[in-house]
Amino acid sequence: MKTLPLLPLLAALLAVGLPARAIEIREVVSPGGIEAWLVEDRSNPILAISFAFEGGAAADPAGKEGRANLAAALLDEGAGELDAAAFRGELERRSIDISFDTTRDSLYGTLVTLTDRRQRAGELLAMALTEPRFDGEAVERIRRQVMSTLARRQHQPDARAAEALQASLFPGHPYGRPSRGTPESVAALETTDLEAYVAERLARDNLTVGVVGDIAAEELGPYLDALFGRLPERAAPLAVEQTRVQAAGQRQTVNLPVPQSSIMLAQQGPLRDDPDYYALAVVDEVLGGGGFSSRLYDEVREKRGLAYGVWSSLRPMDKAGIWYAGTSTQTGRVGEAVAVIQQVWRELAAEGPTDEEIGQAVNYIAGSFLLSLSSSEAIATTLVKIQDLDLGIDYIDRRQQIYESLTPEEIRAAARRWLKPEALAIAIAGAPTGPDAATDAETPAVLETD
Image (cartoon, rainbow, N blue to C red; front, side, top):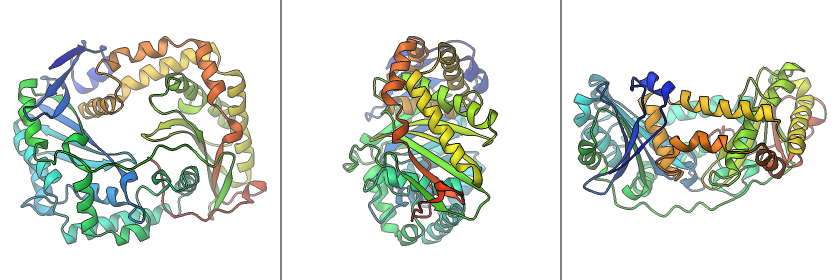
């Protein structure tokens, strides 16, 4: 086991009941070779385990979009000898929470249980991962729920704009496909497709684990084997290629009969391991990441009243980086809103953020990170993400120093290198009037958000 001290995460510690002192992450390896990071907390009899398997929606074959999403939704709908009702009943009677979700790159899961019920909780999770039933009744019930969600999103302008933009950014690549599927692809999925996803992706060499709570490192090792030891040793090869954002400067409109149009914009962004990532995270906070204290907010909402909210966000995925922005406005003011966003992008690219803006952004980045660690489950999930990104077990301890060590000129230079207003791809969904309504886009009917 390797142990390193972390920052005194005061806000997070108070939120989850941990003492206001430095905490430790321990690297634990089970007798069977399964690795996990552990934050031990004996103040409450609760155990939270977060885990991830590489290969989410991007692993769906063409024509089977939504496979990972549907499989994840069914993992806690019956396993082993327990059908869906019996499995859910066991969880409810014992106050055990097991949940699963997918992004484009991964399947995530969590287990939260009282310490004295962890044995049964572990048995149920192991069954869900290695013996999911995919019974016909459960499959059709969850399929209907997914289809209902897809149908609602057909009428949501933010959903349609995001979907149209994503498809144009990554044509011919798995990132350009609907991660939750289309009505046609979800309707066509068979039980064998769901079983294939589990067999391909859920394996020990594909697994990352974070644990927070009432368990010692010596106890955690055997428990990890009980949870994950029955998984196959190796996952199938993951054939998702590195790619870059396409559609530079393109604009498209999805016509919807709604009084307010949604606008999505995007350009190439950094991968998480890019040397400019931290500097650009500061630039993004100045641009629109901070919400109520950003250039986009000041220009779009405060000065012109074009929208209630406007945002920007860096989205580094495993195989591509994106820099997004978005807002919603009255249909007659779409052109003005787009022009203002482009102008803010242009000015920030030319001048970079001021020293004052940089100081405020760095403070916000530090504080928001602490506030995001609002539960044992949130901390466990953060441990998983730090491992997946290979940031190092001491990352939380180093994080603030990384940002504070950036010089204003380094940050401004990164803004000049990366911000490309002329390369912004734009998707508008609604009923805009004027020149912005000139191009119609024929797009699938499902939202892309993760």
